[in-house]
View (cartoon, rainbow, N blue to C red):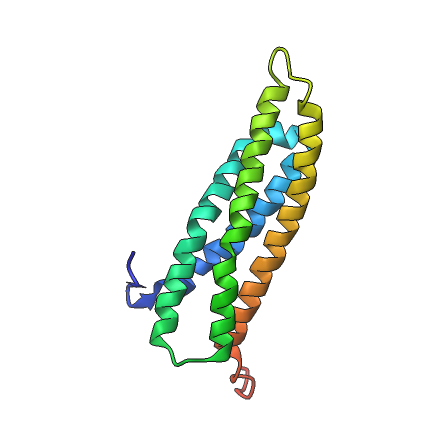
Length: 160
C-alpha cells in the first residue's frame, strides 16, 4: 500500500471514506433490521458496504500509523492512534450482523421457512441497533481525536 498519493499522505485521503462509510453501513444495518421492505431491496448492498468498511478499517489504521511515525511524538496523536486501532472491533461486528441478517432473511423467505427465523430476526435486529450505535459513536470518537491532534494549537490563528 502506498504511503503517499501525488505527494499527499494516504491517511487523510482515505480516512474520509471510512468516516462516511462506517456510519452509513451501521445505519443501513439498523435500517434493514427494522424495516423489512428496505431489507428486501437494499440488504445485500448494506452487506457490501459493511464489508468494504471492515476491509477499509485496517488499511486506514495502517496508513495512520505510517503517518504518525513521520510526525513528532504527541499525546493527541497517540490517543487518536489507540482509538483507531480499536475501530476494527466495531466494523467487523456490523458486517457479521448485516450478513447474518440477510442469511436469516433468505431462510425466512424460503418456501418452507424454519420456525426459528422469526426469533432470529428479532435477535439480529437488537444486535444491529447495538452494533450500529457503537460503531457510529466510536468512529466519532476516533475522528474527534484525530481532529484535535491536527488542529489543537491552531486556535490562535486568525480566521479569514
